[in-house]
Length: 121
Image 1 (cartoon, rainbow, N blue to C red):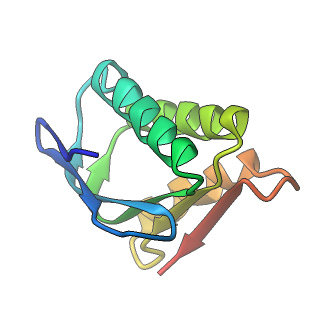
Image 2 (image 1 turned 90 degrees about the horizontal axis):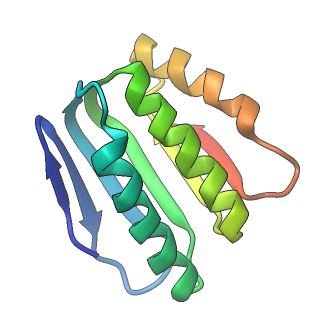
């Protein structure tokens, strides 16, 4: 999988031969319609994770900011991962209040199917 640079946001795929596919978020996501770029990228990540029987881990602890439009794309990612049966882990920095509030809200998307884990560092 390739990295993505989009405005002030960078998504870097961390090389790993086993375990989940890890994507590091850096910078800011402030575009009004990030889904035009993020949604196809997420679909590609999920297909790659599914094809290799791996989960997907998104690490947000280095991201400086994302807007509500980005949260919409993340919600779509959670829904698509569940549909494909791909385990998804969202990792955030609990010391940053804005991240803690955003990810606490995303926890409501969790079900007892073991496909979504939201955890802090």
